[in-house]
Amino acid sequence: MKILQERMFDSLPELPKEEYNVNYELESCYTECFSDGATIGRNGKLGTVKEVGLGVYCPELKIYYCAKAKGISNNEAEFMALIRAMELLLERGVIDAKFYMDSKIIEARANRPFIKKMKPKHRNERMHNFQREVLELAEKFNSINFEWIPREQNTVADELSNQAK
Image (tube, rainbow, N blue to C red; front, top):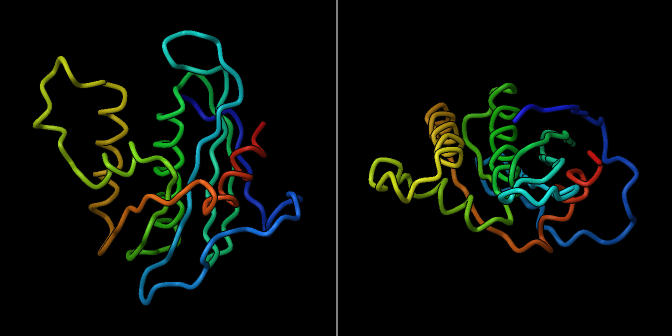
């Protein structure tokens, strides 16, 4: 679960020139941020992939971030992208944020902190650890929301996660 390489861009890197289907109107006091994880290749072992890409996009702060990691599942990549998004906003002093992701599993875990209620036989320890990290970071925000959006509305973060290839 080590990040192999990461990049920050001053502007959107050379990506396909298609229309992005995202509503960029900011909601009152929230800083909006989009995150995504992308599978780069399968090794066929228990849901893990050879490499994954992470993408984070924050229009208001002009954050265009991508990173490559290895040895994790696609859901873990989605968690890592969200965690990195939260860290990037905290590093810039943001305390009111709204995070968008196209993974319903990660959105559900971020919004429903059921760590203690799960029986050990039903708990995936690696996912549990990622969820714990999200909840710990969430405590550093004044207000925070996690919202699922359709993949079609997360195109910039998706393109950034694919840039990590």
